[in-house]
Amino acid sequence: MNLDTAQISQVPQRQRALAIGLVSCTSLIAFETTSLLTALPTIADELHGDYLYGATLAAYMLADIIGLVTAGEQADRRGPKAPFIGCIAIFLLGLVIASIAPTMPIVLLGRVLQGAGAGGLAPITFVIIKRVWPENQRSRIFAWISAGWVLPSLIAPGLAGYITRAFGWRWVFIGIAPLALATAVLSISAMGTLLTNKEAQLLAHAKKSRLPQAILLTTGVALFIAGVQTKFVLLAIAFIGVGLLLSIPNFNKLMPPKVWRAKRGLPAILACRMLATSAFLSIDSFVPLAADRIHGASPTIQGFVIIGAALSWSLGSVLSTRRSHIPVARSAAVGFSLILFGIFAVSPVLSASWPLLATFFSWCFGGLGMGILFVPTSVAATAYADDGNEGQIGSQINLADSLGFALMGGIGGATVAISDRTHWPLSHALGTNFLIAAVLATLGILASRGVAQRT
Image (cartoon, rainbow, N blue to C red; front, side, top):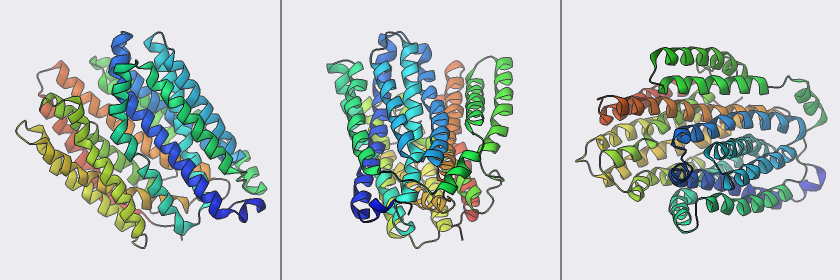
């Protein structure tokens, strides 16, 4: 552990305080994310901003990529405290701007800042865990952080809906600001210095900044997503082509070599994380749409259908923590197998005669698989982080997660858009997404053979 002398005698107390702070940060981001999904239809309606509805969601994710790369880099150079303060400040500024926005483009600006701030917190969390907790305790803290999503997933949609109806959507953003301030005070006071050694800091400073590559990658992903969703064929070809030309080389510069081949070690871990998040999102994001359009379910029921996956994700995290002796490759393979089983089990939701309660239980397998996979791969990734590059490794694993979510959100959204513009049935469009998810999960089982702890 890289703690200063004054902290060594207070390690248990510091760990407890930091654990509370990190879990609170996760819950804060989860609450903000789920609340916005509930309030956004009302925001777009009041501000006549339906034309920016999708862009508001995508902008958050794209800013997240830039934020996590920048914050990880600064954490290596300066320690985690300063970039943490910067990320919280940017996040708060985004909340304020969104809460007073007179037009939808200003809401979009607020969401960009919120995404940049929230994205930066992820690699900082990784750095803190690597420096404060010994390897045999990291699975537990990662499990607690995963659990930070559970309560917001359960209460945020209903609470945000009530606040929007009773007080107006602006209070959704305003209400999150005090939580962000309280979380910041708690976390910053617990951090102390958490400095790395001078030699590692000098090494981190000597490296070239990865921010240009992050910006180009983000631009490429945005163009690719825009291309797959546009209805104009020539424009789609141009956007997709330029997007790939920008994305692939810069992705390769930000990631370790041979990640595409899932080479044994860290590349395989990152490949598995991208495949897992892609497969999971291909189902989790579109089951509520199936519940709405195919089953005619209410918004409450639509959210309820996928809550089971959030709960089982936490259960999987706990199980993986208690079975930390199991090789990480086996945990990853089991996780992908459960995700694959969950995909097939949830597919009957595309039939109007299938009971949604059965879908609730079916998709619990997918969440369980994510929990079993997520914690061991996170812990394994920390072993590849040396002094001075923890932030880089943290940004890489979170970049894999973010890109997995982004790409399948874009591709899945494209199938839905095609269905909306043509006579292609929505059930067939969603079935295509489910098939893609099954292929990705199968590839994940193959890639998991290369997942390994650093020796």
